[in-house]
Each structure stands twice: as C-alpha cells, then as structure tokens.
Amino acid sequence: MKKVHFIILMLIVGISNIFAQQLVESIAAIVDKEIILRSEVEQFTQNYILQNRLKIRPGSEEYNQLRKKMLEGLIEQKLLLAKAEADTVKVDDQMLDQRVEERIKYMVEQVGSQDKLEEIFGSSISQIRKDTRKLIKEQMLVEQVRAMRFRDVKVSRREVEEFYKMYKDSLPTRPATVDISHILKVIKPSEEAQLKAYRKAEMVLQKLKDGEDFAKLAKLYSEDPASAKRGGDLGFTQRGDLVPEYEAIAFNLKDGEISDIVQTQFGFHIIQLIERRGERIHTRHILIQVKPTEEDEKRIVEQLKEIRQKILDGADFSEMALKHSDDENVTKDKGHLGVFELDKLQIPQFRQVLANMKPGEISEPFKTDYGYHIVKLNAREEAHKLTLENDWEQIEQMALNFKMQKEYQKWLAQLRKEIFVKINES
Image (cartoon, rainbow, N blue to C red; front, side, top):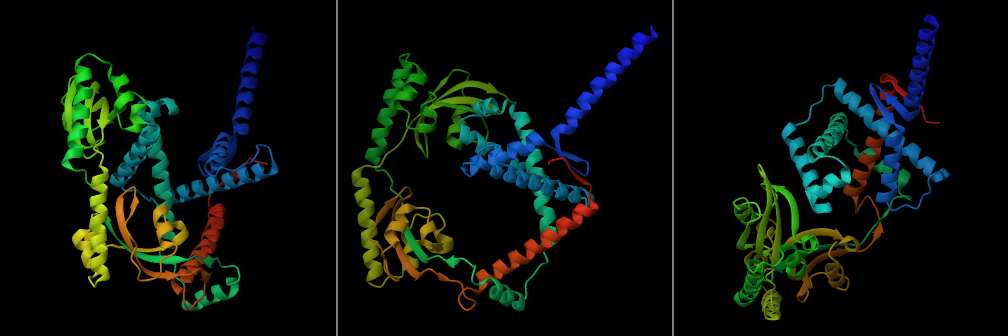
C-alpha cells in the first residue's frame, strides 16, 4: 500500500514539474512582481507589423530583431509601472473613465456595433471595458511618471548651439510651409431640397406601414452607408452615443415599434426599437439625407465670388471671415488656419489650390467635403536646410528632445539596477 502511495506521490510531483517547466518556458521576462509572457511579445510584434504594413516573415532575422525590440519596450513599460507604484503615483479617475469611454466608443464605431465588438473580442462589453481600463490606466501612469521626471529639463542657448554644430549635417530639411486663412461657406439645402427628402421618407414609411420588411427597405433606401448594408442596424447604444433628437424618440418606443419621421442634422430618420435593456437600446434606422441641389451650390459659389471681390477691392480678409464664414472657429481665429507643411495638408483640394499661388493671393471658390472655400496665402516658405538664424525654435526643441532622451536612457539603466529584471528570451 505504501508503495502505491509513493508511486502516486511521484506522479503528482512529476506532473507539477512539467506544468512548472511549461510556465517558465512561457515567460519571456520578469520585471519586479510582473511577468511578460512570450505570447504577449508575439502579439505586440504581430500588431506592430500589421499597423506599419511591414513585410517581415516570422522566423527571419529581421523578425527576431523586431521581437527583441518589442520585448524591450514591454520591459520598459513594466519598469515605469513599478516606479509609479513605488512613488504612489495616481491617475485621475474621472479622466481615466473619460478616456475609456472614448476608446470604447471609437472601437464600436470602427466595427459597426457593440455586438460586433463583443464578437471580435470574444468577450462581453463589460470585460472589454475592464481590459481597456487596465491598459489605459497603465498608459496614463507611464505618461505621468515620465512627465514628473523630466518636467524641469531645460536646454541652454549654449547647448542648442552645440547640438546644432554637432548634428547640422544630419538634420532634416525643413519642408515647404504655407501660412493660410480661409472663408468657408457650408452648402445649406433649400426648402425645395428638404421637401424632396421628406417626401422620400414619407414614401418609405408608407411601405413599412403596408407591411414591408424594415431591413430590406433599409438596404434599398437608407443613405447611412455604414448601417444600410446591415439592414439599418446600429447595435446597442446608451444615452449620449447618438444625437439628442434621435434618442428622444428612440428611448420612448416600445420593442418592435417604428417611429414617425424624425429630423436631425443628418437628415430624416425612421427608427425601429428592436430591444431595450435598462438604459441601453438596440435600434435600426432608415436615413434619408437632405441633399443640396445644383442651384444651392451655385448660390454659395456666387456668394464667395462676391466676398472675394470685396476683399480684392480693399475689404479686410479677417473682418469678412468674421462676417461671412461658417467655420465654427471663426470667432477665435478670424479665418486664420495657421502654418502647415504644404505636402502634409490633409485636404487634397487645399494642396492643389495652394501649389501655384503667390503670397497675398486669394483663390477662386473651390469645393471640399466641408463646403466651398476661398483661401488666402499669407506667406510661403520654401524647403531649406535648418539654420540657427531662421529656425531657432525648431532646433531648440530638437536639442531638448535629444537631451531628454539621453537622460531617459540613463534613468532606465538606473531603474534596471534598482528593480528586479530577469529575461528568459535567448
């Protein structure tokens, strides 16, 4: 009998040793009380390759080097988290909650619905929110620890000059920049265009009253491209996720009930409540947009031409912008958009129009996704090598960043001496 007990004991010990060995083999590194799994390193590496659209084959030397870099990044983060804990650094819970909700909302918008997000993650929305909160909290702690450590770092004039002397041949060329102002006119549909859209919504609503399928009609008629292909399905949302006019009606519907026509800034909606769970609702909708007519666009173009002519005749651009521009920031900036790298202007029409303009010139009206604009080129600076005389502020910032990075690397080396770090990766 004792022999049997001994054999069983040896089996248990053997199995425990196997599990212990497997656990050790799955750990890439240990930092203080935290472990970094090899699977984490692999996931970070794959995500980096996907996000940067790299063509790196797993198992290649390039892949292995990138993997080591990702491991170092994770170790760095764990070191800073350990430092944050030692220094009892805290994050603002209200700010944390705000960032979490913004991230969740963004992810839901990207995939189309909350249900789809749960499907992709294989987790409930509460678990996704919990995981996201942990991730963002760690990011905020790391940001705060770094900011506290380097907030008093400055560079002297001598340090800037020495930095420039040492690195001037390798500093990047400053690209061409433009200083611009604009006047924006949003294309507002006429009463005729609104009536046309409303009558179309009435036609769709009548089909629904006659018993036709909501999802089928949404695919046929809805002008919300994101939801139309899903039969108008918006998934589960909570208060504040959608525009107030939509929510005011949707939250008062009964399960399965279809609304009358609802007008919002996006056009005319017909809403169906699929299900309500407390303060969350699952709805679908059919959207009919109010589209401006050609006459509406011609009217806006003529208005801008008249404004442009008044400026050419001597009217002040900023005063005309304050009086006529539909840009929501016009009261603050008086139409001045700022200085931009010409090649990096996000709106392609601006790049095209400004390419051949001279300082002081005002463009003819042109169209973007925001409406119609006229733009004034206040100043242009051609691409050039950076010099202390012309680009002091930019070189000063480079020198400061360089100094902070050197100090940061020294600090990390010191933290490695103070905080336990063990790397199992070969």
